[in-house]
Length: 444
Image (cartoon, rainbow, N blue to C red; front, top):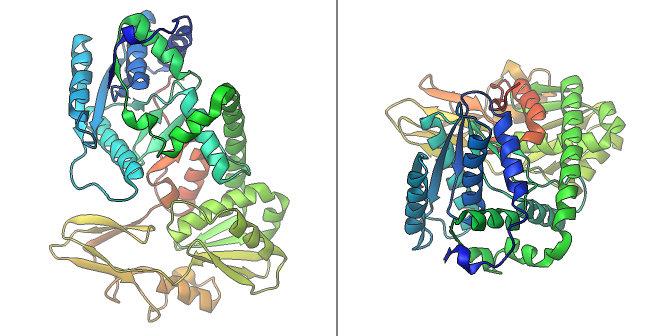
């Protein structure tokens, strides 16, 4: 639905905060920086693009480039027209623009999550093609408050944070959120003042969606929740750094598959220990999220248990061995995966397998007949055998030379919030993979 300025009667006195946020972002950009704004045609993203362009002119930043991209999910009949309207908006202002279409069959369940993944994948691919240094998205103070409230409802215990100011997507390009302190109303005030029309997505008023229900319940709590999100973000960053310190000093990784952790440091800092165990379990289990609060409490209780005590959670086996805790992939739930010739796929959420041959490959677990591997020689024989049995192989044989294999860190494969960059890179080093790139679009 197109919303013209004449349909709005609000005052326009608050839009200075929008320009201030845009100017603060623009001033920090490195020389020659290329910012690609993700623009849907809604008020927030149009306001972001308009404010960035205006701020670049006011700050005399002719050395930077601002372009735009619109993802057409094809989920509504109006989406193509909306993308075309954004394209015309950009042409009128001399801004390079590209429409990116989400093609192929759409899932019957989990559509919103799939659409989000598709949007960021398309944006990341396009940013790589055009050499953009950063993708700017228009998440607002309202979005931040809603996100924090939803996460608190699912898990009321710290560390619960809102959205990070920066997130690495698909392991390739950073997404920046310059408007997390700016209200949606202020953005609309700016658009009204500049005579810019926008589209209202009807799904944003549909109570079927959790975010819409939360939005309606917040009332005047948005600013307070925004401030709470800032504090929660600082707390999460500190916990993540403390977890990285424990990882560096007290954790040994065997064969990119087994974690061996000294128990004493876990007892000294249980909050950081929980944070680290949650991420380690996700990496070793090949999941995008850790096992959760209750399971983590039980895992920490193993520190007080007898030698040999064990439990399973998050597709992992946790076992106490004297003064250490071992974490490895349990044997259940391992499946076979067909990988076509000259393609790549992720097996078990842990390994990226590249089939460089001209024939189909079937990847599965090595199983109980797996031969000895020196990589796990430091482990107790029973656990060494389990570690070997859960490794990938081709039809109960060794991986041929035509197969490339590399470890992935499942929690950060798609989205790495800036809070966790130091921890993610400690994990990357421990698991023998390349570090994640740091944000490089700001000067200094």
